[in-house]
Image (cartoon, rainbow, N blue to C red; front, side, top):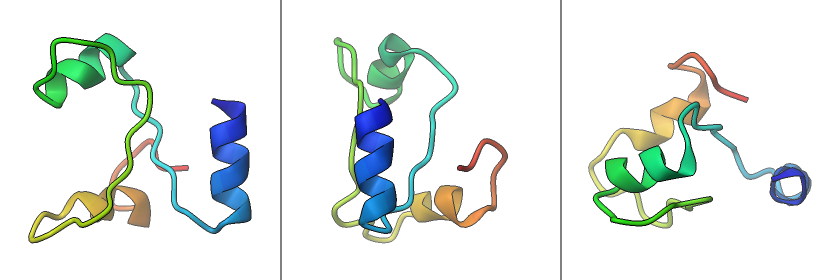
Length: 60
């Protein structure tokens, strides 16, 4: 986790820390396994990037 946050900070990549467990994140993504990290390559029409722009609590 620390390495991921460090390299994101170096690259000016926004980071959102999910409050749940990796099992919870997997379930939210519709996967039957743990998800430790994910990247948004193309947000499309979604508003998911608003999470990292400060429009939600828990933003780093």
